[in-house]
Image (cartoon, rainbow, N blue to C red):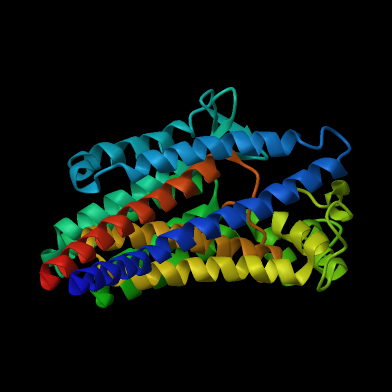
Length: 386
């Protein structure tokens, strides 16, 4: 009897220990969303309008995002693989439709959104899910043939190239680079030949450089980035104001709602440059905490990847993780002046509906798979213990 009781306690302890990463991931996402909510409330007050307007809208989208995540938690991805090419086709169709006048909305010179009346849907966000699922399915299905030129190189690179090209046409260079980076890393992790990947990567960088050089708007962003102080009155204005925000905030910040940058000084304060507002109002301590939360998120998921029972789920979770973390890194780099200015939101924190929904879907994918993997480990442990 005592032995059975001890075995039960041991099993319970093991189960709690295995479920701890899932609980921590949920807490991290909740913490990041809380930072976003506080900052959006502060920005709303700064504009002297309805101080809760931004917060209420974001809360509405957060509810939609939570529902999307809960649905994702119930999906059996092994069964969904039968519809992979339908998912891929839907993603490509969205990226094509947004380029059609009358369907896609043109804002600030870019055609990236479809107006749904209650919100503008940024189609590239939803294409991320289809992109990851399609690549994970294909690379897993063709794992033994990835050394072949056509199967292991031309087809997956063609998938990445098609999405990359459609994003360039919007134009959305930053998101195109994000897709290419995630795709290249998934190819590498799946075991594609480096003799194919390295030359393609170098050629891609060269081609992208040419695209930037022949585009006056993108070229101005690069030149402004290289000397943002000299260009602080024009091309480098946004970055300069962001840097001023971090400088004014110091270590402890000037206090919530006491920042000057949301007072129309900093464009896109509630979206792309919300991290600068946090730096001014809440200081280095909170900005470091946000960076730390993303790092912890990455480490927790990365450590669980060894439990993946097959290459498909390994790549699916890795793709979801990369889209979340790399997007955050790009946003950090842009706002702090380490990368040229690029309109890319900070996951879970920036204002916006479509990106928040997709980020929660990715979290749902990760939690779904981690839960299945841990159940498999628990079942194996029970079999061993008899």
